[in-house]
Every structure is written in structure tokens, then in C-alpha cells.
Image 1: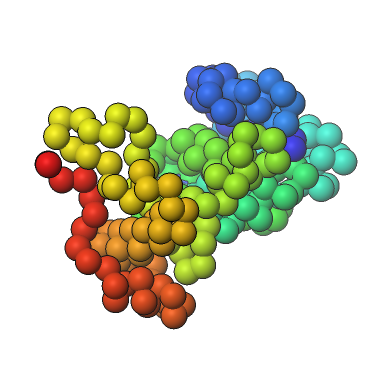
Image 2: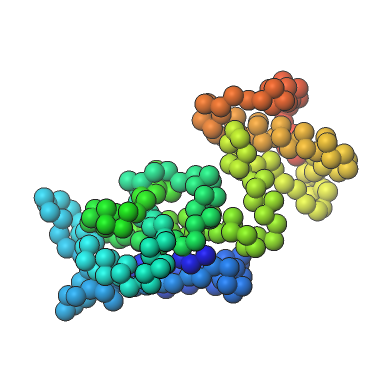
Length: 251
Ligand code: ADE
């Protein structure tokens, strides 16, 4: 997958793209990242890329021209076959489903804004999808772009050693459920023990426990996720049979 990132701060991305799972995926050429500083495409003698908003108001607006010129510098076959993403608090809320869908695209182009916003003609000209990562405002589009990229990359074949693991995460089931809690060695630490069912070797019981925990946690932390979805009869039964919290407790 080819990913172009148009930004004023290309070095912002370095540590995230050099380390961990994304770093390895880039080394393996599963992801080809191209960072472009769109300031390089300004025609202004001081390389200015922003100006005052028409209609007045606070803050500066990123101008359409340098971004359009940077976009035009992306090889034609790539840009003509790319999905353009504009991280913005004004966008559609990002979901796991969207991450999965975008992972199937051959090329992605991210446009990272700063200041008050980006001239809306950029969205129009590039047919960009405005995507929000949550109901809060960050100082720029770089972190949101990294978050989107990270979530999308996990579904690109070969990026995770075990794609099944991504498919069993929170938000990947229907209805959307949070993941079950996980435990590893030691069995006991500071008086807290691992739930016995996980040590039982009974895979059916373990699966049932995980599904119940996922349901309970979702009800507790994100009841909104269950609001518009019908629970399956099995899930209803799991909830009915649930006998108290099986979180570790001091023994
Ligand atoms: N840029 C600033 N805040 C943002 C948000 N919440 N989502 C996407 N892009 C942003």
C-alpha cells in the first residue's frame, strides 16, 4: 500500500514510523510511506501557506494552492487511484469498520491541517473524506493521521503476525463489543489471581467466559454500543447466567 502524507511537519512522523509494528511493516515494504512537506509547494517568497479567513474570525486558514500543487506532484497513477483523507474534527467519526475498509485501498493520501482549518476547496477538489478521530480538537492533523494510519495498517495482510488477533479485537464483532480482559504469567501477583477458567484448558468454557466478559465490559463502559443492536439468544443467555464479576480479586 502506498501512503502519501502531506504535512508541514514531516519529522513529527519519524518515531512512529521507525518503531514497533509500523516500523517493521515499512521495512518489509508492506507500507510505502511518502512524506511531503507542502510548504515546498508554496509560491510565496516566504513560503507562506496560510492566510486570514474570508469573512473574518480568529486563526489562519491553510490555503488551497500549495496543497493542490503538492497533490499534483504525487504520481498521476497513484493519485488517480487513491482515497484522500482529511483528518478534521468536522469529519465523520472514525470506526474500526472504516479502518478495515480503508486497508483494502491501494493508495491513501492524508492531508494534515494546522491552524484554524483548511480552505474547504481542498476537500472538494481532491474529493477528500473528512474523518474525525473523536469529539475533541487537537492542534493539527498529524496525530489523527497517525492514529488512522495505525488502525488501517493493522488490517493490511502481513502487518500483524496474526491477522486473526486483529479480527478478534474490540469493535470487530457484531454487535460492536469491547474486548475481553487478558492475563499472562504469573498466575498470582500481589495477591491477585488469574480467573481459574483461563487455566482450565476447557476451550469452550474459556470462549464463553470471554464472550460474557466482553458483554459485561461493554455494558459497563460503553452501553451506547449496544443500544441499537439486538443481542443474539446466546448473548442474552450469557448475560442471564452471569454470576458476578470475575475480575481478579485479592485471594
Ligand atoms: N484535527 C484536530 N482535531 C481532530 C480530530 N478530533 N479528528 C481529526 N482531525 C483533527
